[in-house]
Length: 167
Image (cartoon, rainbow, N blue to C red; front, side, top):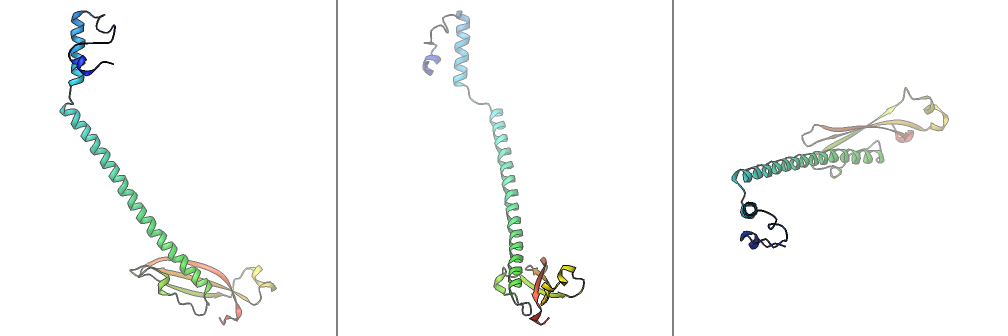
């Protein structure tokens, strides 16, 4: 292998490299090797490299900011849906005559209400058979309100309720 000092001083130790060239071309060959070894980047090259780095950094920051916004929105949607599911489960398990949604079931500032209506007319034929006697169809309307009191989400669930509940 040729050392840097050998190239700069004009000593080429590789056989057949400079020996086959005429003296004029040997001098040009040595000068081009020196120039390659000792050359520095120009100001334009450095500016282009800085511009490319700045653009790539800007694009990376924009993508990460957009991703962070999407994560926050997805988390908010999950909180809304999870709150609704919590209230629906509670209302379906509670006594339909006395449903009061506890405050600690929802995030702070959220509220919910559950209204149960009994469907007496317009039942499908299969609900009128003898097997369903003693049961009535309850329609649960569950509503969750956000911190500002606006409607956050609503769910309507149909459930069979025993008739002896006093509706």
